[in-house]
Length: 464
Image 1 (cartoon, helix red, strand yellow):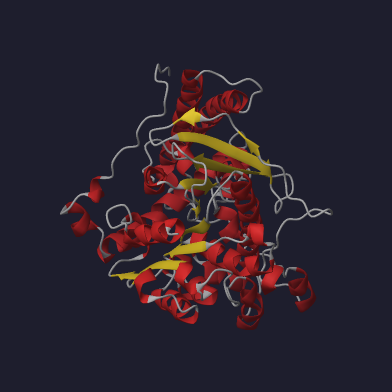
Image 2 (tube, rainbow, N blue to C red; image 1 turned 90 degrees about the vertical axis):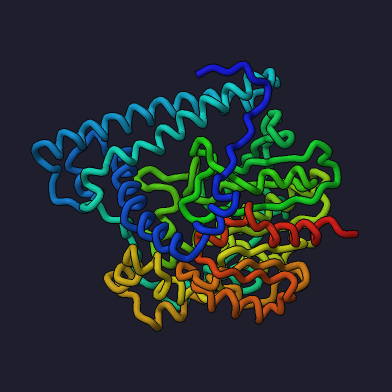
């Protein structure tokens, strides 16, 4: 694949941004369909795909990784072998493209813009092709589990105390012995449709041997611009799907710098044998604790980088899993130095009740989260002792007037009642609280058509 362009292409428009189509689709019926597709189709296909990437050369190990006693015989087995072979070929092709991308974007000398654009085009095309290899496993979709459960036994109280971080959360600022933070390496900038874009990478302070990544979208005049650190939802890997619509990138047109971190266990940080985000579910409460702790520490590094790079006010926030991480980080930051404290917070499709998400949330129920906990020996008392580490029990570092929330009344994934209770406990002003007759997926996907929560965040970040 070659290109003669000297800037990255304009992202496609989401057809749901236009009425009346958007108004007809972005309703609770859409969320019910999306939940079924995610839990019954996408996740089982992802499980088989991850098993092929890890064990494709060993049919017995592959079968066990998808919950089967043996590799299927006959036509199904032949078709499955072809799908595995195609997945491994795509893996190798993507690995070569990604190696070239890294050497181009992070090399010592700055390449020409068209070389950067071409390297990115190759990377995203090969990544998208690899991700789409999931659909080769449709023949065993009904036999593959959604999650490869590896829930550890519940810890005792002493181990729980060790897991506590700042402000009684599970997140701690990642200082080394001298109070410093990991050094952030920035790539060469590449011209994007809304302004310069670059990538950041640094040693993950929360996951040993891991590298944290983030994509940065900058306005043409970035000096003194406010920054929005936008955390994605579980399983969302926007830098790996060609043509993905990301409405937050266009906020650079309104003077914001947008940092889009790659969450732990997603994208380039995906461990072998898992699909993006799977470990958070597979390891039960401990999986979410580890993800929150690692991603919250990443956010502290990114807030520091933004301020060192001349940022104005800094906001943190996100959707679903990103919102759950952001709200915990906002509480933990109350114990951090001023330069690490975000100034504003935006939470979309969130809840302050993690026990309700784990046991009553529709996605948790659909993938069998509660049953997996029972098999691992977790009791209600164990969960009651553990969950406070994962909930925003304290006060956020920013004032209530700097908190924006968007909630769906029909949200059953992060149930609405828990989000509303958090908004009331934190005294979020009425003008900052947006409640819509939508569900978990539609309330976030519809932000490009109904951007009032984002508009409010921009007002908070840019007012004198």
